[in-house]
Length: 85
Image 1 (cartoon, rainbow, N blue to C red):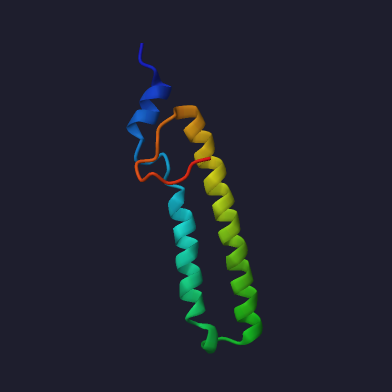
Image 2: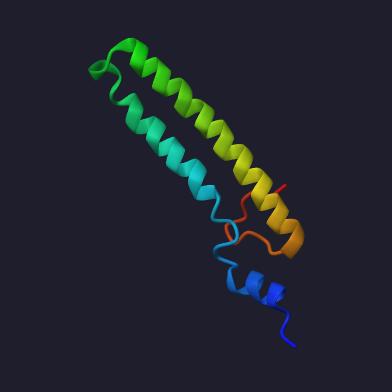
């Protein structure tokens, strides 16, 4: 009998910690948004910047929670040696 759970984790090793990309994407959005500061009215710029900063914190929280869950279930180390709690 094949242990499908173990198979899934072994086959998806490179995908297991893909949630790091979400944080990177939000950081890219923040960087791109900062380039528009002098092209948009201040109220709108600050409003969106604050929302992007909140999105970054949420992305970090999600990344840490989901990666910790899967690490504890699989005990598969991250190939890039990133911190998993």
